[in-house]
Amino acid sequence: MRHLLVAICLCLGLSGPALAVQPGEVLRDSALEQRARQISSGLRCLVCQNQSIDDSDAPLAKDLRVLVRERLVAGDSDAAVKSFVVARYGDFVLLSPPVNLRTIGLWAAPFLILLLGLAFIWRRARALPALPASPAPLTPEERARLETLTGARD
Image (cartoon, rainbow, N blue to C red):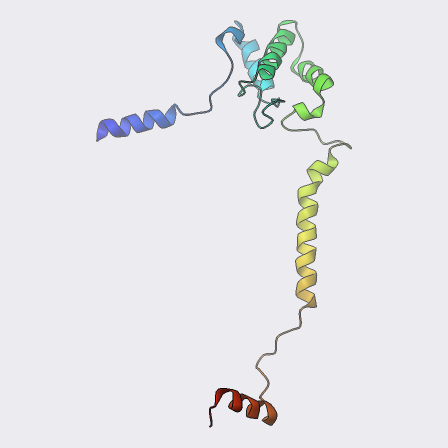
């Protein structure tokens, strides 16, 4: 039983996200490699679109990873590398797009939808008539009609 528990813990511990970076892509300088990983974890794979280029096995993601490493080896700063990639592929390549005039709708849309939903609910609640505290008693005509429908007599 103890061995099974150890095996399960090892499997869970080793089941983190798999990185698609191939051994041939890894830079010898660990500081540059760390910078490359940080940059590429924030860049979107243009094929998969829901993964960073660090996590994607797509050939285009590999090309972008190599490009990032080449720019770092050439001496570019992290910001210069990101700017270079964005200049080529646009803001879409960023997993977290910047807030600017072109993307303000993207950032504001969830809040606008929430506000519109709350306004709709509030208007509907105000339009509904208030329920009486207790029901009004039946009129003699209504009582007679009820008795004929149910066949019950008091």
